[in-house]
Image 1 (tube, rainbow, N blue to C red):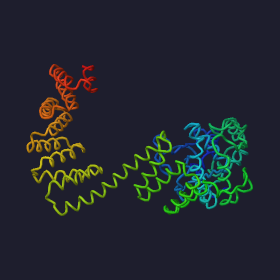
Image 2 (tube, rainbow, N blue to C red):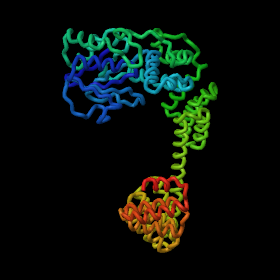
Image 3 (cartoon, rainbow, N blue to C red):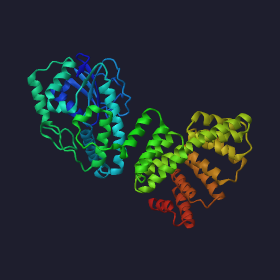
Image 4 (cartoon, rainbow, N blue to C red):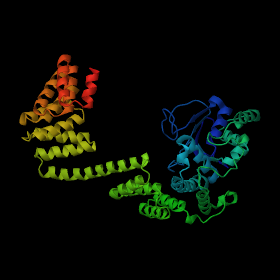
Length: 490
């Protein structure tokens, strides 16, 4: 099916379901046109402009950009492009996709039945919406190349595509291109069917047959045109957890997050110990802003499989997100406080420290400097302001701030230690060593400070003094690993 025409210098944008013959088509075009085609993988291409249409100047008759439209946000109305739409039977594309996953992420991941529940439900939602977008309501300028048609007659597909691009090729060149590519494997993880005939195997070690039958039955209900070519038995898909996952994805696509949560809970009622469903529930709760519940769900998912690194990462990320949300609330309160007492240096530096943790450089530095300009008597105002300034690389100002704190409270060892670190950063190791010496006079029971003191002495070239300081430190902390390693290095 071909609508719309283009001319030489054509710009093709692929909209292909994964494992639907895209690379086979690209190989055919490359064999046919050689340097006359510029292909862009888009997802992993080095130096890719990440734009549709491509903004990189190129020579040649055709440029071809790959896109799976996984988020279904690829525009359908880009002027001057021809969309090449590729689809495949859902069962066969899903099997191929799972075997591709096994090749790159391992057989254990691909054969994980619980993960397949979530994956198939999401895949069903994507497949249906892709077909509705690109096949039921296609762009005006498009060429639809179903997988079965492509592998059954590659020459005819090439002839259609080159004609649409305004590129003339004779039958001999077409036959030579097909002959050069037809003996290759269609995909790394698949068996190599001779001349790309349709792969008939519908069983796989990587997908549960019962889940896959529910997946196909679900799609046949919503896309009736699939029914004549179905490969598996018709089953009651509503008894499968795949269906409520699909319904959750459909609800998310419609912006109904609460409805999606209800569907996920229905899936979990069927499989309460499926940690992937629990993890998906955590993600959805986080999108709803219910972070405490999200953390609880994510923690429960991680406890079901303690060795799941991705589940632990989710828990950690959610804790960070909740902390950031708490900081946003704390900032709002601190801003109200500063508005009530704009000249209070303590309130001001408190707000500066919150802004620092939120990464708002300008606000943090501005409030810290305003706190210092008030000439606070509290030494800790100066110390906290120094931390803010140092965090954003203003080391000279940070040093002046902590020195202001030392003037007001000269007997706090940590102030001198902080000053020493700043002096080290400023390339003044002799002064840093002196500051560390004073810090240790005030608080000698800090093994890390001893280590830093020796390092400063070494940077200043005072090797003999450094050896003596290290001996004193080891006498006090003989088992400290940093000090022991420092001795071995010396």
